[in-house]
Image 1 (cartoon, rainbow over the protein chains, first blue to last red):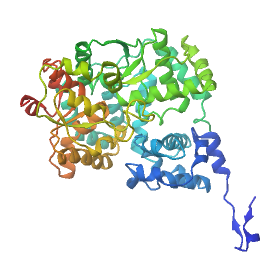
Image 2 (image 1 turned 90 degrees about the vertical axis):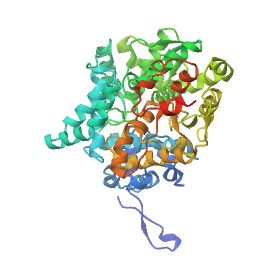
Image 3 (image 1 turned 30 degrees about the horizontal axis):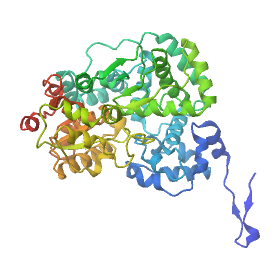
Image 4 (image 1 turned 120 degrees about the vertical axis):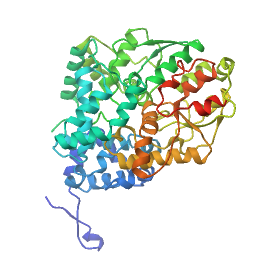
Length: 205
Length: 289
C-alpha cells in the first residue's frame, strides 16, 4: 500500500519508504536488526580501508536498506569488499557492529543467488569447503581448489601468477606438502555445522 | 604459567615460523603451552561466505568447549584472526544465555558442553601482562642494539574490545621491541589494514594498502617490520615481490614475527628463531646488531 506523507505540513506530498526490505533485513540477515541503531554519521565510511573501492559506503548501504533498495544492496560490490579490520566497529559511536552487518548482508545476498564479488565468493566457498571437509584449512588446498574452479585458461593464468609465491613457500618450508587430514571427530563436527546451518538465521530464504 | 595454545591453521603452514619461534621463546620464558586436542579452524575473516553467524559461533564454541573439558586453562592465540574470533564469540556466549543454550544444543552432537569459563588471550597480552617486561629483559643475551623495528600490530590483534591495549594506538609490541634492545620507530600506520583474507582475490586494492604500510615503515626509518599475525606477515612479505612488479615499487623489507626477534635477542639459534624461513631475509639487519 502506498503511503503518502507530508502534505499537512504544507510541503506537498512525499512517498513513504517501502519498508518491506528493511524488515526482511532485520528478520533474516545475521546482525541485520542492529542496523536500526545507525544514525548515518558516516564514521564507518571514513574508517573503512577499502571505502574508495566500494560502490556504496557502509553508511550508504544502511540508508539503502532503509529506503527499500533491495536490488542495489544485494548486488552491491561493497558488501563483499570488507577486509574485517573492525575499524568501523570500534569507532561507531552507536556501537553498531557495522562489519557484522556487512558480512550478514553478503551471506544473505549469496544465498539469494547474487554474486557481488565473484572471485571472493568463489574463494570463500572453497575456504568454507575446507573447513567442512577437514575441520581445518589447508592453505595450499584452498588456493588450488580456487584456481581450478576457473575455466582452464584462467586457471593456468592464476597458477602462473602465483607460482613464485608457491615456490617460495615450498622452498622455505612454509607449505604442508602432504594433504591435510581431517580432525579426529570430523563426523560430529559436520553434524554440528549442519545443525547450525538449519537453526541459524543467515541462511533462511 | 600454563596455557592452551590455539595454534590455528596458518601457524601450521604459511606462518610456521611463528610457531617455531614462539615455542622457543615460551621455553626460554618458562611458559608451558599445551595444544587443544582435536581443535578446529576458527573460520577466519572469510567464513561469512559459507557459514551463517551460528555456524561461525559453533566453530569457536567447539574449541572453547574442548579447552574447558581438557583443563580450562587460558587459551593463547598467537594469530590475530583466531584471537579476535574466539574472544568475540566467547564474550557473546558469556553475555547471552539464550545463545549459549542454543550452542550447547548443537555441541551435544559431539557430546561437548561449554559453560563459559574459558579466557581467550592474545600472545601480546600474555607476554606483557603475565610474563612481563622484566622477565623478558632478563632473558636477553644479545640485545638487538641499533636495529630499527617498525612494530606493525595489524587491525585484529587488539580488537574489538581493547582488553589489553589500545584499539587505535597500541604500545605493547613497541615496549617488547625496546625490552629486547631494539629501537621501536614511530609508526602511524601500525593499525592500518593489510587486506587480510581478501588479498588473493582483490589484489589491486590490497597492493595499495600494503604499499602504504611498507612506505610508512620505511619513511620512519624502520628496517624490519615486526608483526604478531600470520595473515599480516604473509600479505606484507610474501606478496612484496609481486607487488613491486605490478605497481613499480622496489620494496625489500623483511617482515618478521615479534617472537623471531625475541628468540634472536635471547641468543637462540637462527633455526630456533626460524630466520631461515623468511622469504626476505632479515639477516643483514640482525647480524649488525
